[in-house]
Structure formats: structure tokens, C-alpha cells
Length: 604
Image (cartoon, rainbow, N blue to C red; front, side):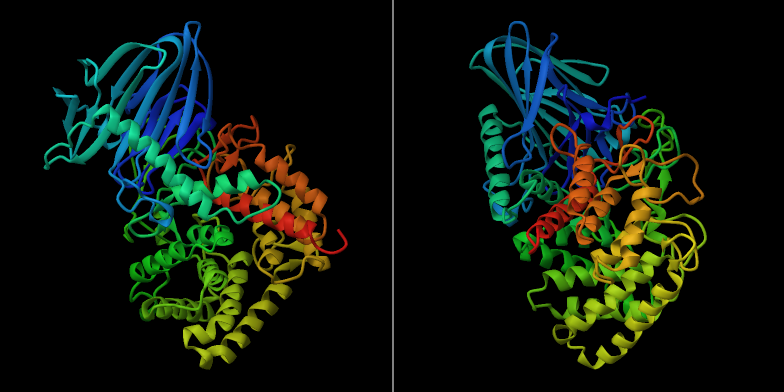
């Protein structure tokens, strides 16, 4: 059973795949060559599922940070005899800069430990276990390292010192003295091709520096936000870019699978895919930097992945594999015990089968906010089809934004986002070459508005509710002012915001998604995205001070290197859920901007 806290991990990314490394210097999660590939190291989910650790062979005081404006993690070990610094990175392509990050990533995990004072004994353990721990590979020493063979992948370790191999695990020990360093690299490749050649230590050293320079160039190009929490906003932007699969432009919801929403429960899902909703909101969160290339890549990806579907009166899929795959059928991995015995461990996600009508709104909202007025014919047809689908399907029930695995219902948020889809489609009509549809879209938009105002408001609840003609609250109702359906000073908006703050907020000031039953066992944690929504909504209602307080509460649950999980355990206050979570970082960026803008309005 894996017990290390989720918050103990730092993210590495080459904009194709992701790794998680603990504060102790152990890589306990690596999927390669894609975010959604089978894991090579999965100790995060089971102690026997593989890891790669580098660190001192004696007790040490540990601190760590990301190198400024990068996703290169630096861990400092201070021991009784000296100090060593470990730098870890997933290598970007050589001299990749700005928007080109990930275009030619070599699939190499790079590690460099340097003694900066005194002397430090270093121990390295290398235990790859491909296919989520199913394979214990055969290891063969080669010049400059070793090759591990087994299954569909070959794993090559570049290591310039002697290795001892036993039980499919390689170990090396060395005492580093001040000024000396040890450079290591892992490379993967298809098992049927010649194994990658080992890298010279100097090459590893240079590529770590080059990767840091690549991240800094991207950060400089996306540094237009000026205001409170500027550092957190910039870092969140890098995290969102790190969750982008560069070859297609797809953006994954998180780097992991099956980190639970309820410890020991069944709420364990695979988030290593691209949700239309999440990716659209990611583009909006990055919009302060006018990311035209990311925008173009994402819409081109979606238009190609969904080609032909909307023309045949088929629901728009809510999610895809990062290569555009539609079938993401879910299965369990019974050989894995799960993080803190939270089973089952799942790969795939059956939410791909669901109808979620809100995706039309998120998609067209992103297109409207980011559009430079130039859409290629395929993307134009795709967006037009999404608008038409929203107009045609808005009265149908669905599973809603939270993907409830029960009967379809008439969720308020889904109706709201269909309204958004048509509202933005009206504005986009000239560039969509669809001015003839405007009158129909406006008429349908008003019908949706009337339905929400008539059936979405509950006098009994004193708020807008989760479903039409219901009484239960849902944090997604906070989106009403965020998308411009009603102004922040509308009494019904203020009442809804206050109801969420009163009825859906826990003792720490964090917001729950809802309290209604959802058909699953266990009690989920407080949802960080919803907490940022509350901060955002409070700013729009004129209560900027309260919004700032809620924002500070939410951001305080970032770990020591600024990463946010999905939720916070209500009993312990510990971050839980898949990690790091794009939704949470999206919420941080948007709420910070809203609070800044509210504070700069006249009268403040």
C-alpha cells in the first residue's frame, strides 16, 4: 500500500507525458510516451509497482523548489557531512522555446545530483515495473548503464558508475565531494526497436539546463498578468501548459489515475484524458497571454477528433484520448492495492459514454473569448455544429458537469451552458458564416433563459438549485454570474452565492460540490475549483474582501511547490484526488483575475 501524501509530490512534464517525484527524490509515477500510457513507475498506487530513487544514504534535512519560471525541480539535501542538490526534469526537445515546447521531446527523464558542500554518500535504486507493475524486466548491463527488457517497451538507464543488479532492481552507491556530480537519464522506446543509446553525463547536464531555458521562454511569453497573486497565476499557467499533449494540442485533466476523492472508497477515476470542458477552460485561463497557437492547436484537434459526429445528430463526445481516441472503456487493475488501499485502480473512464450538454457552452465560450476571427473551414463547421446541437438538445436530460453515474436529469448548469453556447454563437455568427441562424439562436436562447429563471430558482431553497424544479444546492450555480447570465448585483445571484457560502462550505471555508446523493459510496472532499468559483462570484457581487479571504483559503492548500490537488479531505484537511488538477489551477487563475478587476473598479 502506498501511503506517502499526495502533496509530497512535484510534477515533471515534457508536454507529452508526466512524472511525479517525491521530496525524498523518488520518482513514483511515470507514464511514457504519453500521459495516458501504462505507467513504468507506479509506486504511487502500489509499493511493488516500480520507482526510481536518488538521494543521500544518511538522514538529511530536505527543501525543494522549482527553478524560477520552470518545471525543473531542485531538491536540496543537507546532511551532517555536506549538502547535495538534485535536479530533475523531463527533457524538452533540444533548443525548444516558447510555443514549441514538446514538439520534439525525446522521452528522457533526466536527474543530476551535485555535491555543493562537504561530502555526501548517494544511493540510487532503479526499479522499473512496466504496465503498472505487471512486468519485472530483465536487466542487462551495457556500456554507460543498463537496458531493461520486458513487454512492449525497452527502458534504458544512463549511469556512469557501477551498478549492482538483483531481483529486477539496480542499485548504485557513490560518495560525492564538493564540486562533483552524478548525471543519470532514463529513456524508453518500443521493445521491437534497437534500445536507445546511453547518454554521456555532460549531455544530461546540458539538456537539463536547456530544458530550464525552454520553460523560461514559455513563461516570459505568457507573463502578461499583472496583479495580486502574480507568482501563483504564472505558476498555474505553467502547470496547465505542462498538462498539454504537444503533438495534438489536447489538454489532460490531471497527470494521474485513481488518486481517490474519498480515501478507501470507490471514487477513483482516470483523469489522463482530455475533457472538452477542461481544455476549453484551460485556454480561457491562459487567454491573458493571447495563446493563439495553443488555441489553434486545440480547436484543430477537437474538430478532427469529432469530425462527422455532429452532422449525424450524435452527441458531442465529452472527452478523448490525447491522440483523439473516442473509446476510453474503463477497466480495473486488480493487482494494484491503490493509494492508501483506495481500490479499485482504474484505467480508462466510462464517462466517455455520457451525455453532458454543458460542453457546447464551454467550447463556444472559449472560441468567442479567444477568437482572432480566423477559423479554418473544418473548425468553423465544428463550432457551427456545436451551436446547432445546443439549440436542438437543450431540453434533454444529461449527467451534468459532475458526471453523475445515475439516471439523466435536468441539471441547471447544463441548461445554463446551452444558453452560453447560443449567446456566444450569436456573437460569432459573422466569422462562422451563420448570420442566417442568428434569429433562431436568439429565440432559443431566450427560451432557455426563461426556463432557468422559472424552474431553476427555488423559493424554498432561496437560491438557484442543482436541477430544475429541485431544492438541492450545487456549487455550479455560481457560474450564473461568471458567464454573464445575470449580473453580480442581481438579488437572486447574491442569495445563491450566500446560500453556497452558508450551506455548501465546510468548517475550513472550502466549498463542496453538492450534498445530494450521487449513487456512489463514501463522502468526497471539498472541491478546490468550487472554492475558487465562490471567491470569483463574491468579487462579482461586490464583496471583494470576502472573495479575497476565500481565495487565500483555497490557495493555502497548494503544496510547497505550488501544486493543487482536486479536493481536500474534510476530516484531515489533506489534499486528495488526482494530481495536479487542471480544474483547480484554472479556478485559481480566473478568480485572481476577477478579484484584481473588481478591486480596480471605480469606487474601490
